[in-house]
Length: 227
Image (cartoon, rainbow, N blue to C red):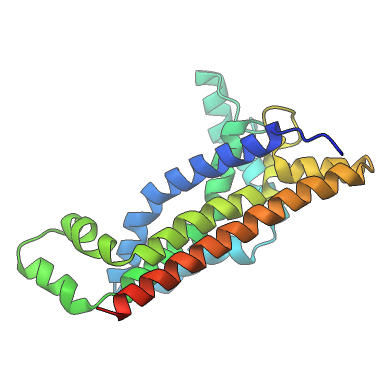
């Protein structure tokens, strides 16, 4: 049986965990704002948010590489003043993954907030609660399926990403060689047995994640419907 090198999978899960945690903190207030605002700029903000879904990963990866390279103002400033190199580093992978996975966190949360009974939100405001208290104490406890979906799908999507992480992180062992890049490398070297094994692991992981999300949502809907 082909030997499994677990480091690429551990790097993938580490990257996905950090990305999901960072995006939750950023996307939660942003999704709440989108669900509540009636600004004429809302379609523009939603379009920008959804852009990574329709944009080819190689295109987004190219722009992210330009943004994070030492030739860009940001990359040059960080490298010259703090000795922080973003391109072809794990830190750069986290930043790029946050951009690419952003809509997968925002859209389920926004949909959950918009599906709430508006009278419940109005009652919280009438009771003197602020926007942040209403979000944390009223809105969040009532969108558990959307919350779970956003976190889990963002995590799983980051684990399976290939184009952006290859463009920004390259293929550096023990630093940026995540599972998807490792599979590509194995195919390039014609090691089809291990490529099939690695692909099977990611396939089973992705399937298990989707089953868990649908199972949780179904149980939650049945419980709510029986009340």
